[in-house]
Image 1: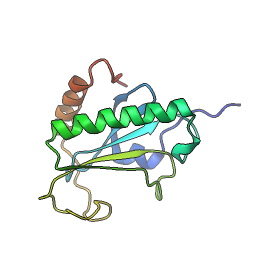
Image 2 (image 1 turned 90 degrees about the horizontal axis):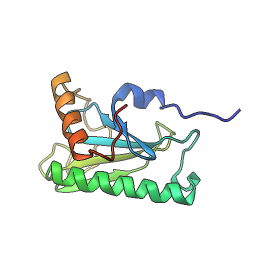
Image 3 (image 1 turned 135 degrees about the horizontal axis):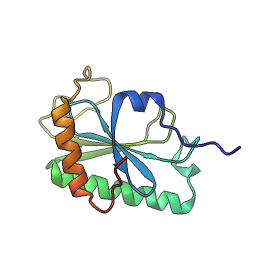
Image 4 (image 1 turned 180 degrees about the horizontal axis):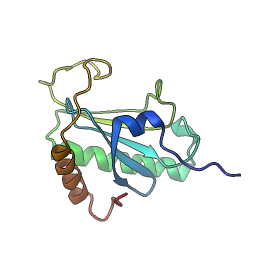
Amino acid sequence: MTPTFALHPRLAEDCVTLGRFGLCRLLLMNDSHYPWFILVPEKPELTEIYQLSKLDRLRLMEESSLLAETLADLYRADKMNIAAIGNLVPQLHLHHIVRYQNDAAWPAPVWGKFDRIPYTEERIDAMSDQIQHRFKGFLIPV
């Protein structure tokens, strides 16, 4: 039997699903310290980018670049941090974190710096609407 894709429980717990691109599910990390989005290729049992087919690697880079460019513009980023670390969550996923030179963790990485402060439901709805509008025609609601 062929395995099916399932979102890692830690990602499901820590994030809000915003939609799907052609390859990846788009998540919002529920931490109001930073605009922090995550792409998860909807392929089962992957832990590394090289495990994707060549075509899917290209799709991942296109989706990641589109997301990064849009977030940098939308949130007026000083820097976009993009990382595929996976030490705690082995499922392949790419973090896209909007950084500012005046954010609390600058210039260090954001991991483990502060306890998470969840967004309000109203802020999640507003960010979701904003992202849906920006990616109209590219992002499928889930």
